[in-house]
Length: 494
Image 1 (cartoon, rainbow, N blue to C red):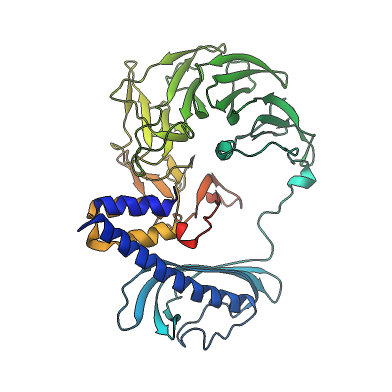
Image 2: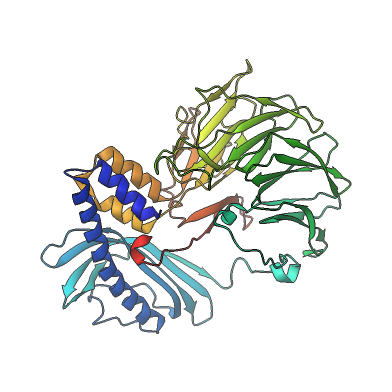
């Protein structure tokens, strides 16, 4: 089921006067948007062809800030809101970005969300106004990052097995010095195989070695590293999607030997290793994503997934399960989690990011019980949670949290277009779901507040992995996001 169809059904069921009329209104808006996108594509084609003078194609007041560009190989203009047609004029909110080079060969980018208008011209539309005064400009003499994987030896062996619909769940990556030579080693999952690339001096890696495999209709879904037996070197935890227990591997001087299993199996997506009960031994949280076994019970708040499994470590590759009380366990569709002292209690709490709903914050209480307190501290965050990372973004010595959800231009446009035809609470909730990513900054009162919009780090596109890191050594964290997805064959599908 596509995102747009899910949104349409959500609004239709909540709308008035009838679901049919709500669906008809959304379909009319998206049909109109297809006409607008045809014009936007003409504008982009002209810019890519080297035209800076767009007279005849746009109104005289429309001027993109690209005077210093000599090439514009990348251009995108898309509507985030489409108003009603009034006197052959439509008010718009447009997300646009242009990438190119100047005469020196330096890379230049400009991007903004801008208010604008289109006017009817013949059988089509013409962009008559666009306020570009708020554009963000970036200039670099060279790319900040250069692809060196092949040169370094980080190339996966070719796999000829067919890709299943669940294959996108196979995405594990872990980096650590596992053999004590002071050089980072890399673990990568490629569907049914876990590979180890041993680091060599000078940013080179030895050819990959298969550490573990699975077969049949199962896939490897996640890998984590941590010292499970207290001997000072990182051991390995491996999860499998589709009815397999968690597998444990002991690090024996850089060689990994399977040393046990945890649980009875499930649709495991990943693990979090952390000392959750404060006894000095690593504990294990296992999260699951039941793709192929169920359909989300709700696009906005699915409750037919599996709660996390909490396993308390004994420090010797054995674990005992800490059952979650029924009132605490959240049956969400979980992709992963992170652990930190979110609540400033001197211990670690578990934050689980979920698709199709809110996030969860689990706390192991001093009496041995477990509570879930995400809403209490402002961390429940509705959205399609794909990843999360931790850091001190504002340098106030408090934990901050960046969560990758999903930003959909089509979803934002639909949410903005339904107006009073659906309840305000439903519209606001859907708007949050399609808005994009979240940045929670720790507050003096111990809670958290979302500052993604005012710091303009929410439009991460169709985000999956996110990372907070100081990539330019200026003592300030940057946000890095991996994004992308497969679009439907029809433009109205996504």
